[in-house]
Image (cartoon, rainbow, N blue to C red):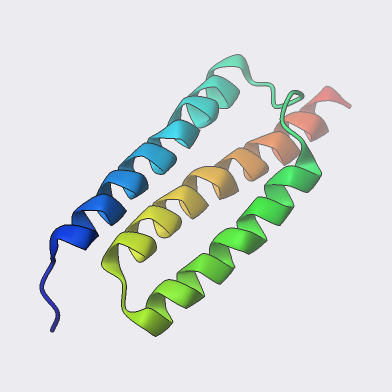
Length: 91
């Protein structure tokens, strides 16, 4: 079992900042019931990238990388689901 070091503190800070950046977008998408301003291609590519980061975090056993990317994956996957659902509701 590894213990956190000072370098991990920067990792956790980066994790918190980059993760909460998407929380606002998720809230806005849910609140307005619209995701027209969010690119579908960007979401899909970003989610694939997050999956790669999660695999990488598992392989190097990095808690900050795993925490940030799993939470960010959940936020972005939720935005993707909302975008698809809201698009269907418009038709």
